[in-house]
Amino acid sequence: MKLLHSSISGKGSPMVILHGFLGMGDNWKSLANKFSEKYQVHVVDQRNHGRSFHDDDFSYELLVEDLLYYLDYHQLERVHILGHSMGGKTAMLFAVEHPERVMKLMVADIAPKFYPPHHQVILDALGEVDFQKVSLRSEVDEILQKHIPEIGIRQFLLKNVYRKEKDQFAFRFNLEVLEEHYDEIGVALPPRTMFEGPVLFLKGALSGYISKQDEDLISAHFPSNSIVSIANASHWLHAENPIDFYNNVAEFLEND
Image 1: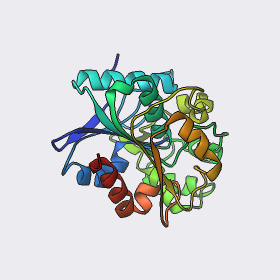
Image 2 (image 1 turned 90 degrees about the vertical axis):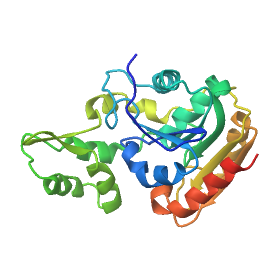
Image 3 (image 1 turned 180 degrees about the vertical axis):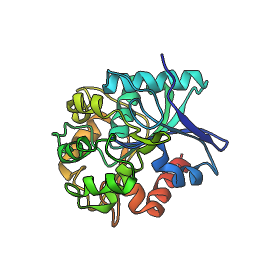
């Protein structure tokens, strides 16, 4: 087994943060600093993302195995887990498979249902970037801009551009493998799986990822759930309204 890359800060009950698809732990830096005032925060890069290892295989089962190995390696018996989008799916599957390792679960803007593929425009745009011909970040942005008008999404993706060598840029994520296994990203939580511990679902008020119709499915898997809506935020709710996001998570963690 290979160990996931992480950034660890603070003291107290351990809390693991899992980023979303094409993201990385660095996206959570500001909130992690805030949470680390009360908790030992582990901001993890999942496989094929960030500074973690690249591998040809990719599925939620493997992401759960990676996380279990990480907890065992760091001798973390029980943890709070906060996962966003793809990271939320990892967190949910981990909780139903290893409930004894989870104290509280927090899921940001994702439900346990199937989602049809919807990142194809982004993947196509990323696929057009040829790092043999590109020598500036601004040139990468120009290529992405043809397909992705939203500056916030482009900035999110551009965080993954790093200098692999002195005159060579690359993406931190493993684009080839993530494209190949893209169908895995939307899979539902297996039926008749359950985690009975406390769970907080946070949904962006401007996002359609968690609908009213999803609440029965959420309760079937997570009977002790509560759902809060984060105002003025869409899918990247932790970045778009970090204050309300933090306050809701902090209150949930502090309540017995």
